[in-house]
Image (cartoon, rainbow, N blue to C red; front, side, top):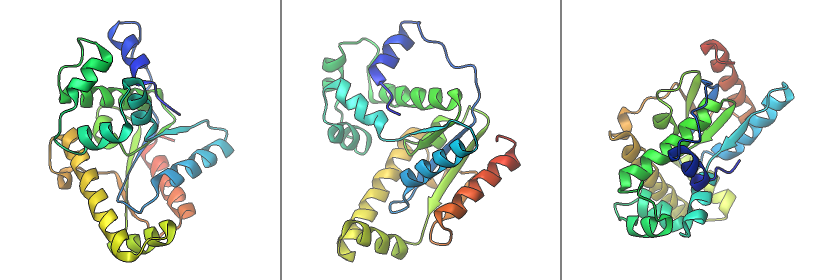
Length: 224
């Protein structure tokens, strides 16, 4: 599902859109590089639908659609604004011509609002995007962190992308750094102080087993 950022904001700040009255259920999936959360999200959606429950997931579509509507390249929006300390707010303001956007924090708050909105609507799986931080105030959620030993992730990425192990390791370390920075920018704290409900070692369990673990955890929390 793609979220139209500008349409959302136009309605939200014009007072034409109300916060959803629901409180989930939802899942956030955070992952180390090499732990394929998107594939897991797709499999979770299929599992829920087999049970007669209609779920969907959101991930990079939020930034993709945002960048498209802002007339910015997504890489510029993601890597210069979110993953670095560079400021592209001049471009953002020019693109929007809106008085609502004044600084980097405002953009982060806006993205958090959209993620929180999706969580409140319920039956949503949020992949990345600092979902664990943005949904802190929303009940009936399960925050999951997918991890694995570095060597396992290197081997997996090397096979998937046909990279030599050195390049795979470089990519993983750089991507992990960016993701940690992203989390820290949204949480305003060190990534080590961000706590998840469930941390799963992807090197130990298959996707089917991970799905069972997540469903069992949701049942134990009373949100399924």
